[in-house]
Image 1 (cartoon, rainbow, N blue to C red):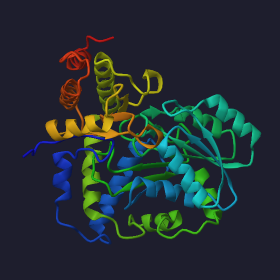
Image 2 (cartoon, one colour):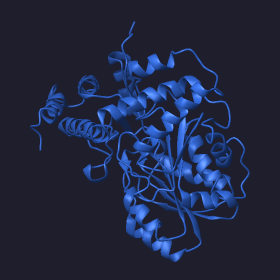
Image 3 (cartoon, rainbow, N blue to C red):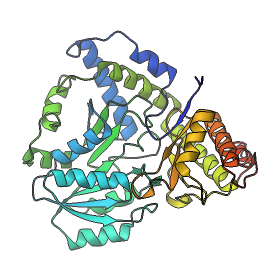
Image 4 (cartoon, rainbow, N blue to C red):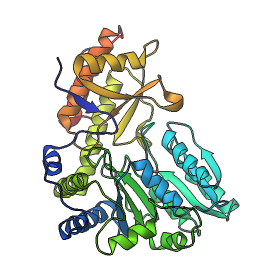
Length: 383
């Protein structure tokens, strides 16, 4: 029987003991002053992490719910939407916009590549009717981080709104919603914010509110005006997951106590260690350093090796769970997450398990090469 597990997938991620303890508190009424106080605290803490003075709301749903709320409140049937797609979740954002009747113009960049700002600039100039631009901060399916600051600077020159999926990035990778011109920023609980699934968060700029007020799409649960009205008394529009709010409050405290710069530096260090280890094992990275994510790393499977079978061995024999490929990369890559409640020894265990599984699969691998490469990073000896 195996009781010890190491969750190295990009959501859900491990939950810190302090957060789990907070969620075990007795439930309180969600229309009480006690809950209002907690909700206000949470909002103020999220504003610090989003680096925004804009309104921030917490919904009881998944990250996809926040993405839908962003679209439902800004896209009316017939509106032109520009979707910047670098992977599976960029595609999802575009699908949501289509569901709300948008005329979606897709720019599909190669999976494993980031958004080309020159292409975006050209498309915005050619199509002044674009109302909304959809972008992904951290493409979870590939491990690509896009230049949101650069995209935001281009969109800010136009009347269009910038909607950003920050579900797997916020809390692991720096984002400055106000400075970078992000009009609606989405994230969720189960990634770098170190909670179980069930909450999503959405910030809304003053520029966006002008569009929201005149939007014609039907919305009820996802209504931002309804949320704004409820938040006047620090309530939520509809019943929140109270225990998850307790956990969110505790998780945000952990992040802010560590310090945002230190949090980002930790994620960058873990990412560097994983990438060095993977290269030392003779494996190929899906994304090289220029736009590689600090939250997760995509790795091509060894030639003539069953990638999902390899992941199965790593999980069943060593208790370490990696994520598989999605969409066109299914069965071709595996993904190692290093986000949220993750530290050096999590990486050492994951790399060690990968080495042993590769050896069992008959791959030519030097045991200890990957772990040594990771150690060199952690000891400050790697370039």
